[in-house]
Image (cartoon, rainbow, N blue to C red; front, side, top):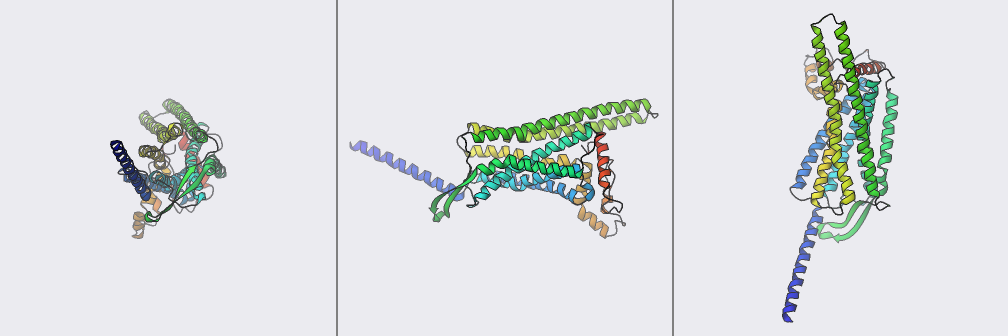
Length: 411
């Protein structure tokens, strides 16, 4: 009997020691408010910081390029600016807040329920605006290239479409505002500086509401846009290829200079090849960037019952891949455009150019004339006295001609 009691006491002592160790570990986790340990904690902070800096810089350049010159405020460029603004929200709002949710064990932003609801809604809205804007840009280019004789989209029409994009995105993201709520637990640990613990959760009215919304988001935010973008750019590719064949045949029939014909054909072929690479890159990067995050969300809602550190790190990787589109979009839609590239060069070299003008090196000319471009787009100075409200339409027509000719700088 004494042996049994002795063994029982040893077992109870082990249970007490184990429970004490677990409690101490939980206290340390909650006092530090960390869900992810080392070294993943600091690695994720560094990676997210790189994405935020590069994405914010690139998209800010796009917005500045259009805002600083009236002649850049065309209907087509307004779509690109709208994409840049939504990507800025992704970089400055969605990424930092998502990183906080990944790294912290409980809600660190106080007791305000509206903040919990609005942050989730803003995150979802910026993602919807970004993907719908990419789709709108593809449809606009499809209309200009495949049907060049139709009237081009004017600025007021573009404003109406962009307003509709934001309204639709807010409606699509509204379930986040409805279902998210903030719950509190009073723990009263003044020695650790913790009086209460809050969690921002999604409380769906139906059992599998989150799963249904994930499937809906997968279709609207990923599958439908990637289908529309792929079809639009495929039609653009076929149309440009047909025009290249027709133009080459016409030149070979009517050209009197046989020496210049191979040069023209090679130049058109080069431009066509670069255009194809750009169109394929846009579709592939969009698809590859957003696929992991959408699949992870659907898988997590269907099969995952608990959250571990490994799961949070996997989610962070998928999320960073989706957010990387905010860094690639300024390159695909801005830097590869001849007019935007010229404006970027002026913005980045503004101090150097200003010092040259101050020293008399400018010779009375405007700064923009110091920067040359290789594309056929006309050069418009920063202080052109002959510019008026019709210059926007003429520039738009010139861009349409470049698009119809398959110029990769405008596609």
